[in-house]
Image (tube, rainbow over all chains, first blue to last red; front, side, top):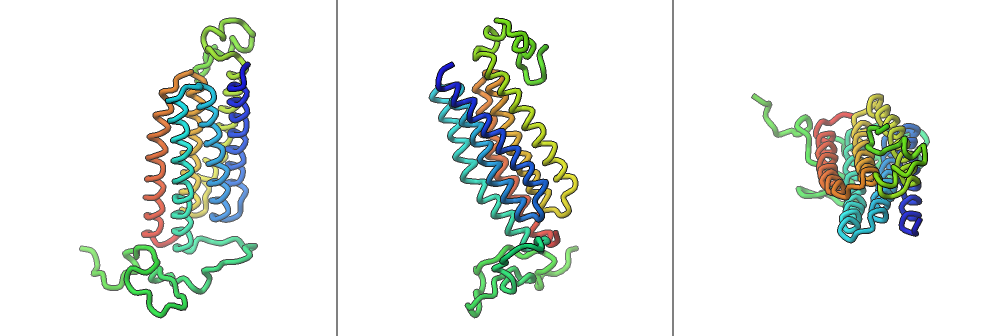
Length: 144
Length: 115
């Protein structure tokens, strides 16, 4: 048994453990935002460790490069995807856990127009906000 | 016995020299890969439970996202189990598709307007 195999098996154990933690977190956490952070952080770390285990197991340059590429891509896109889901969940008033300590957007987020009501007088077009849904767009004629 | 993961598990159990010829990486790695598969299966079952229960649509989107991550991890373990590094290419494509799918679901949730 060489050091590469030891590293590979250690990373397999760590990766599988973090995947299990992510699954337990997504079942046990109380609301969608806490579930999302458990799934994203633990799940990304677990899968990343599994791909590093692949890189150490084969110990070939091209496989290692592809594995590290997968890990880098997951680490880049997972926060963006989770941010998009969290933003959409807040925009559609997904229920927030009763024990939540701080909700910094409370009272500042216009649920109708999806714009932030801040000290700025009028953010105008192109300000922060999601694309409006069809139901809340006032100047849109009915379909058909 | 050749299981669904393609590893000659009976040879590992018997400690015969057959596994060294077929797997090429020793029997201990086979045990670890089998453990990884079992843990990932349990994690997938838990995540599927959240996918089915999930009180709101964002919960289901998060569960589906995590399920695709576990599939990518299972592809990694399968590459080790079968000794085929080509399978990492599959994971590259899956990682690309995964992000686009999650972003599309998030936009759909926002446009739908209710949780």
